[in-house]
Structure formats: structure tokens, C-alpha cells
Length: 225
Ligand SMILES: C[S@@+](CC[C@H](N)C(=O)[O-])C[C@H]1O[C@@H](n2cnc3c(N)ncnc32)[C@H](O)[C@@H]1O
Image (cartoon, rainbow, N blue to C red; front, side, top):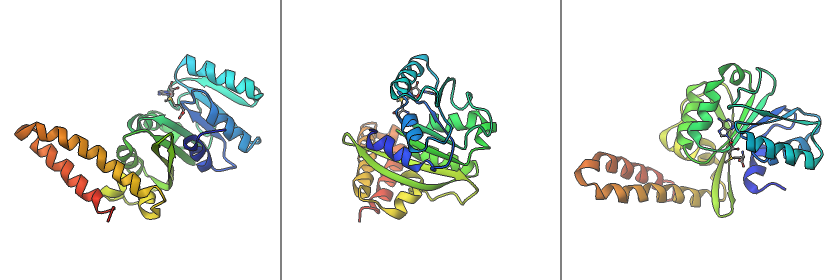
């Protein structure tokens, strides 16, 4: 059984779509995606040999070695254009996830959906999607082992660039304000506040940066009231 984080990623993958799990590591997500629909094509890909070996082992143990192909390579490079309709990238930094999509424009251009679970850099990733004529269709917040995670489902199609608070917190999360929303906003504020305390020690040298962090903290605090 998947943990809440990977289950939320799996839940966002359209049931009928073929899918590749990029950075699959142990292939737990790829296996769940295949179990959810045994008629679809599932590819498990990873940059490194060790994770590919682990993926092959887990897939063999699950009895799916003839159904889920493991490919070693960087980002989307193990895929050919139109080979899959959906790509999942989970557990990496948001900047790396955007870089992976950007590095293979021919594959990216043919996708119908991407499901992303960035560990950090969410604002950068959201902005990148809108700058590349994609938009966010849905978002989910989950808690696993005491940590909050954001899951982003995006699709091709131009849409207006979200406002700053929407890029930071997520346009759909802001709209839906799910159960964990207040805790999530507070945790964002806590991260910014910690940096602001460090910047305060820098005195005049870091004043501009400090003011920018204080402005952002104020912006997010509006969503707690
Ligand atoms: C922290 S693990 C995440 C595993 C799994 N996706 C999850 O969310 O539990 C990151 C995995 O991504 C792989 N990886 C890192 N950079 C990659 C890239 N450019 N292309 C494909 N895989 C990559 C690593 O080898 C590692 O197996």
C-alpha cells in the first residue's frame, strides 16, 4: 500500500491514460498505477542504476515484470513523443521537476497531463507551468509522517498567470482551502519567518531581503484571518 503522498499522486493520474513515473526509485507508484488499470501502459524510469535495479526487483516481486518496463535515463529522455499521455514526477525539488520538463520539449509537447509532487520550489514550478502555456487543473494537500506535501495536476492550455499568493500557496488550494490549509499557510509563514530572523542579524547588508521576506509574511498572514 502506498503512503498518503504517493497515493495522492496516483489519484490525480487520469484512469485511462498511459503513464510514466519519472524518478521512480522503488517503483511503488508505477506498480500502483498499473494495479489501478491493468490495461494501460506504465513505464518506470530513473536516472540512476541503483533505483532502476530496485524498481526491477519490486516489479518482479509484484509479478508485473512483463507489464511495467523499467528504463534508465535522465528525465523524459527515455521516452519518445506520444509514447505516454501522462508523466508523474514526485519527490524532487520543484526547480528540478521544471528542468526535467523543459529539457525534453518534444516529449513534453505531446503530454496531456503531468502530476507533480515537488519537495520545495513550488512557486517556481507553478510559474514555470504558466509561462510554458500550461495551467494547474487541480491540487491536493496531504500529510505523511508529520510533513505536508503539495500535489499538482497540470494540463496544456494557456491561462492568466496566477497572482503572487496563488503561486506561493497554489491557485486551487487557495480556492478550495482544504482541511489542512491553515496549517499549510502557517508552515509557509514559519519557513519565511526563520529566514527573516537570520536576515535580521545581517543588519543593513540584508535589509532589502529582510523587507521582502516581511512583505511576503504579511501577504500570507492575510489567509489566516
Ligand atoms: C527522492 S527519490 C523519489 C522517489 C519517488 N519518486 C518518490 O516520490 O518516492 C528521487 C529519485 O529521482 C531520481 N532522479 C533524480 N534526478 C533524476 C532525473 N534527472 N531523471 C530521472 N530520475 C531522477 C533519483 O535517482 C531517485 O531515485
